[in-house]
Image 1 (tube, helix red, strand yellow):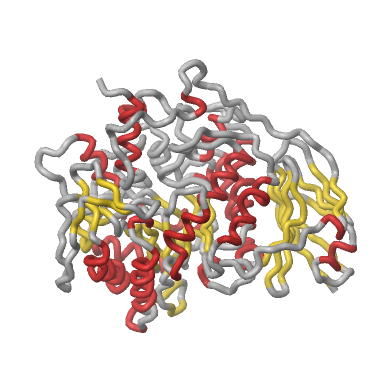
Image 2: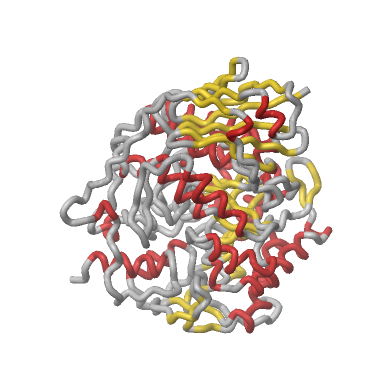
Length: 579
């Protein structure tokens, strides 16, 4: 019998990182909570500090992230608030396609396009203005293939035909209805572009006659070629295939008027190749023939591209996608990993988990490193995606909350995390269910037979969508998440503002954000005790403002005179007005 650790390595190869994996290699290093002698050894606690802070001008470090990506930028991508759905698991619409029926993860695998159409009003109610669908293109079974390949087919990440919609999800007409209906409600639509690998039986000739040239070697995140281990999959000779890839990317803009692409395992193309694809996407999106109606107004497709480069090293993100003006945006894995360390614990297939990271580490260890990106680079902040463990389960893994006993702190932690992402300049993505604090019932630790139970860390969050019959606590969280996200419409400093870090310690984090006339202070309290921050008048002068500034609470905590009170485990937004 194959050892579980070797199987887990194979799954990571199959689902997360095609390049550089070998299923016969030495077993992957176990997570901290998987050690044989103590499988439950994480026990995180929150700071109980109630210490007050007196902030004066001499305490401020005026270094900023000004002119980086969305920091002090009018870029239209900065306003995006994207709702991610795993199509195969999200929702099943009655009288629609049957769904894939089998795949990795704990859902019923009956999600279809009609289920998304039926729930667009719900999606809109969460405060988002865009939706990202995981791959929807046709996957064709190979005769005699293994059960593991059947499961992999269900994910959609190994397509057989880039120019058709998988009938298990619906039809091209269904997809057009989804896009048109979303646009009518003011929701942009992004598709998932897997442009570096496909199923071995992929159609290699495009409608225009461009060729996809197959290759048994994949580019890895280091830029090297690495032999693939999946018998049923293939990578591409990208330079020889670039016209085919550009045709796929532009075809669906013309056919459906989509607004751009999420780019899977983006390191499989290099930044110069991405530049060619991006230019094609933006050129097609700028054509008047692709005009559509968004919430009653005629607009052009947005032309957004966002790369998945799963690494905590900003230099690798810069090298793989931002260099040479390659991709406009990338998911902020470094900041996400640190945020869950501060508020919960973390999963990671490469290094052990940890928790109890101080709030100040978000600034000291992560955000300062953003200055290493190209100036035009845009980071997309998120909390969960389909390859990570749900935030709720990470809270339970940390033993901050108990599985099956979601208390107030459980929901407050979700809102606090969401508020942090809402306060950071740039686009953000909400994974379906995070707006209600969804988790996988009965799961906090990945079991040793995780593949058979569909509860491995890299696919467990692919649970059935939960949008009906919400509990009072779930409904309240969704309403609060919506309120926080919608603040970005009325306060552009949140999505576009330059940032000055005011203060942080173990449990307190405070930023000053400004864009044009709009000024906001954001305070996150990750601890269990209320914290007070006194803003002395000389702070305003140091920030280049009039000495006559007043503060008013927008959400979360309260203000009295010049003292901000940040409640335990919360995010607080304060409007600053100066005469």
